[in-house]
Amino acid sequence: MSNPLTRREFLGTSVAAGGALLAAHLAQRAAIAAEEATLAQLPPVKIYKVYVGRTGEFYMARPTEEIAKFEKYFADLEQKLGDVKFIGGDIIPPTDAGQVAQKMAEADAAILIHLSGHGGDAPVLGKLIDVGLPTAVFAEPFGGHGWMYFPKWHKEHKKVVLLPTTDWGELDRVVGLMRVPVWMKQTRILVVGPPRGTADGCSAEVVKKKLGAELVMIPNTKVLEAMQAIDPKAAEAEAEQYWISQAKEVVEPKRDEIINSARMFLAVREMMIKEKAQAVTSSHCMGSPRCCFTFSKLNDLGLVGACEGDMDSTLTMLIFAYAFRAPGFISDPVFDTAKNALIHFHCTSATKMDGPGGARLPFRIRDQTDTKGGAALEVAHRVGQVVTCAKLVNCDTMVISTGKIIEIGTSPMACRTQFTTEVKDARRMFLNWGADAIQGGVMTLLHRVVFYGDHMQSIADLADLMGFKVIEEGGAA
Image 1 (cartoon, one colour):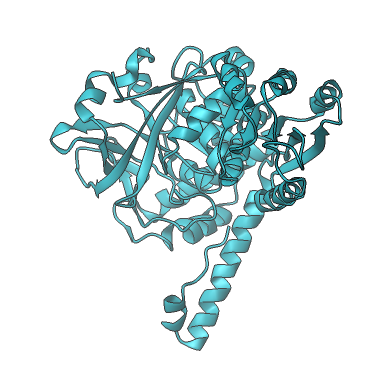
Image 2 (tube, rainbow, N blue to C red):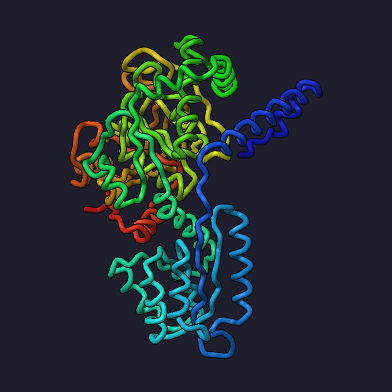
């Protein structure tokens, strides 16, 4: 959650002012850290590691000391991530594969390090993969010719990611993905008012069966009642500290409207703590007060707040938050083929699009465009930033594309936060919007979620681990 002062900022103040600024900065960091600690925390993901193949003086066998190097690598990775725990460490041979398969049942996922072997080791690895855990097989070159048998597991739709590479950093990436299916099964989502989206995305039974997440239905009256229990002074302090003092400008909203929005956040936060929830979505988000500030700060904190009761976007945001620690921006997109572009806009946005530990983007406090009321956000997104645009529909298909932010918009015809992304083929994407995978009303067909970074390959790998389908919007016909 670090957000340090730069040298220029520090030297640009007097000693006294600098001391006051530093004290205020540290106090804010401490307050946010304390706030995160009170919200629902998920336990570390247990990953079972297995080394397969002989080492030492054999043809195409890796040096024996390489196992120690892997052990140190996994120990360092566990410390770096802080939310995974590596267990196991069996070596096959001499350990029997059947015995290892039995012990793997205590884990959430598995990593198989293929050290050496030929065709005969494929059944050994297959026995471990058939345990059914989300599994990665890491196989560096010159470890034998058994790799030819590995792709069949992918064709058979086993829950396995194959990593034929010398890049150990790929293990970091895939370990991050392994958190998703485990944490989704421990996730609770507050749904305020009727859910909206695809039929399966709105079904508590289907969401539980396919992804493991639990939907907790709450009437909006409970949220409004919870607001009344919030100390007005606490709401004013929250509004001043996190919003008013940090904004580049407050344009239309009055101070009372901003405080009321902060009061909403404090109420929803308390409800999430009580319900042990990691996400919330509301179909009453454009009521009084608007939920723009609430959802923005939840996303800044690494949780999920999704507008308009959009269950498909909520689930998408949870997947990306767990995999990449990246918040999403729910968008009402439109096309401009003259710029080969997809334009994204909405009236709320996270201000920490790089994740909870990143710096806040510049923002102005505005009213909500179509109702001309309440308090909303105009966030200046980063020009030149590569983004991923995605949406999980019916809990089993991810539509996805990439782009690059080329300009920030200020059109009075659109929602407050606006940016234009250059895409691969805007006309193809326009003509094939949704790739025939999405059915429903306007919001269901329209909404997409934008995330910083190119996550195409990782989502393809995650699809293998979780068993969903991936369709590239605007890709090759």
